[in-house]
Amino acid sequence: MDRSELFERLTNMERHVTELNEDMQTLKSLAVELVEENVSLQLENDNLKMLIDKEERKDHDTSNGTVKKPLQSKENLAMLYKEGFHICRGELFGKHRKGEDCLFCLNVLSEQ
Image 1 (tube, rainbow, N blue to C red):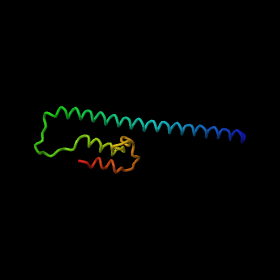
Image 2: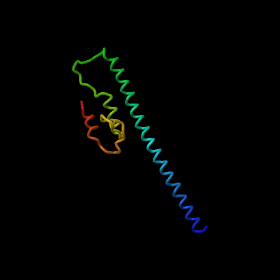
Image 3: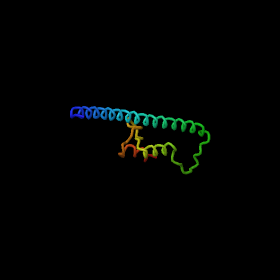
Image 4: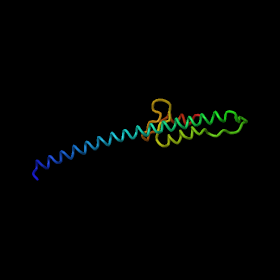
């Protein structure tokens, strides 16, 4: 194998590796979008279930001074936050936090 053939093969291999890397980045972005959409749909589903339960329990209102248990929705939001997703209001909702804490999300969790 002469030098020009070796150089040509290395150049082709480098091009293929670059194409693979670009494809991997595209797939990674798509996967992140799908996970965010899935989380959003799960939250919406949970909220709808809670609304149905709330309407069913409306007749059985127990406001006799007992200590209230935290809402299941708060627990779900806390779980999503721990998994690395934004739970704050606005356009960040459902997006991945990339390991960073968010003061707005923490404020949502601390509200009573």
